[in-house]
Length: 223
Ligand code: ADE
Image 1 (cartoon, helix red, strand yellow):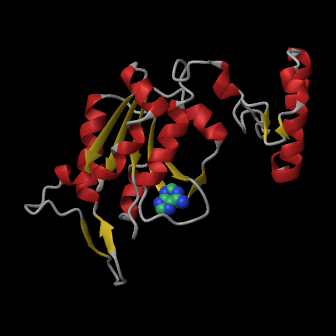
Image 2 (cartoon, rainbow, N blue to C red):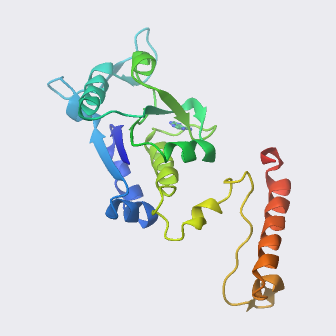
Image 3 (cartoon, rainbow, N blue to C red):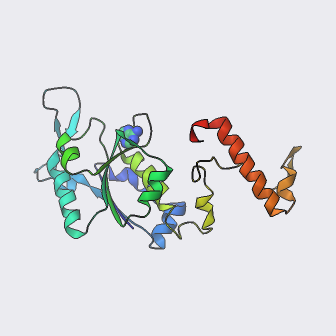
């Protein structure tokens, strides 16, 4: 899989992909992540990428030219399954969307900008708009990092224990059960006995019950 990210703040997207599962997936060549600075595609002599909003109002708006040039360049190299724009008014992101996107070959993610981008970009170049939650971020970069992280860990081979991603919260519309590790007794706080029993059937049953219990309690809307 190849992910191209377009942003005016590429520096914000260095560290999220440089650790843990995402880094390992890149090292194993399961995914390529390319971060592009929109400014590099500006035809303006000062590499300007934003301008005042027509009709007035505070804040600068990203212009169509550099974004059109960047997307045209990428599309001349390969086909893309989806050209995504991150914005608080997009479709709410969830595990089901992450699952679908992890099967794609190539995607572009255009990071939103705090005062928005020229609407004509959204109308003509973008195929999907995604919000990561009902709150407003300063820009779409952190949203892009969240989306990429959630997709990459689903690519087969990213997680060493293949079944691990499938047992995540939300995969079956249930929250994950609680987990414990050594010591079995910490200052009198004991690990549930069943987990020490070695009886895998009983343990699976217990975990499923705990998942249901937690989901009913914390996220009844998922059931
Ligand atoms: N940009 C600003 N806020 C956002 C959000 N909640 N989701 C995606 N992109 C955003």
